[in-house]
Image 1 (cartoon, one colour):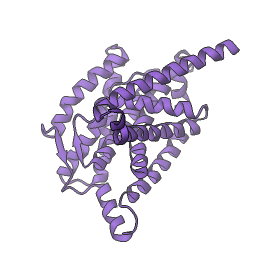
Image 2 (cartoon, rainbow, N blue to C red):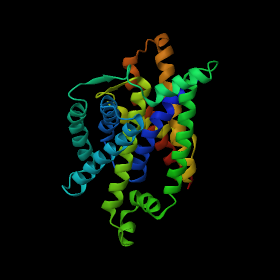
Image 3 (cartoon, rainbow, N blue to C red):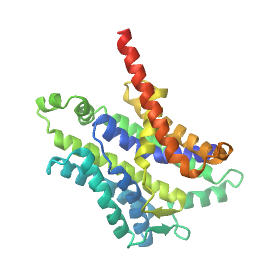
Amino acid sequence: MIETILIEGFIYGIMVLGLFISYRTLNFCDMTVDGAFPMGGCILAACLTHGLAPSVGIFMAFFGGCVAGLCTTLIYTKLKVPDLLAGILMMTMLYSINLRIMSNRANISFLRIPTTFSRIISFTETKFPDIPSETGILIFLIIFILIFKLLLDLFFHTDLGLTMGALGSNQQMVISQGVNPQIVRGIGVCVGDGLAALSGAFASMYNGFADVGSGTGIIVSGLASLMIGEFIIRSNKITWITLRVLIGSIIYRALMLLARRYGHYIHLTANDLKLITGILIIICLVIAKLKTKKGGKNA
């Protein structure tokens, strides 16, 4: 149970890191995530069914997500469409694109197709038969997340990363420094959607199939993870900020797993998970607002 929570927390934590870049850093309402997440799984499925290596499929999934983010940015900047509407339009179009990627099939199973995770499980069962097979996947994800988090932390200490952080809170200051905000925003949104697609590819490998509908409501769960992490760790240092994103994702997945496993005692079913997520976000927003008012009175 704990291994499942950690694995799902790390996999979906990659998507939440992408949301952090677009929503928190750039203050950009990017609804493309709902389409980019399943797009990662669809691209991976297309690559695997055509005989390409899983590593190539994972890279192509990330690249495809970046292209989706670029399209959203172009709709926003060049066509002057509001960010929320641009994301919704791209999300809607991606549903048809994802079907095309998977040759008009809504679902592709990886049961007889070797993936990175299936190979890790086979290796673990062969070399270490005494430990659970999913332990190998967990170790792989821990190493991957640690390396990726380190690179992300280093990026936000560069000039581009600092400019990206300033763009969301003070765009005029960025413009006064002679920086084109459209380019910086475009890079951030591309990376954010690329991470969502990468997360979708990993999720598809873990679930054993790719589905065009797997991204429905994923942005809501991502925002819930973000808010949970912000309540637990309050810091302006990027190292702690990226850490709390991952912690929030793990806690959210733990809550959802507990709701699925023990929810029947209070007459909750899997169909109620979206309702629980929505209520959780509302509670987080209300508490944050109350704390802001309390802080203002104390000041």
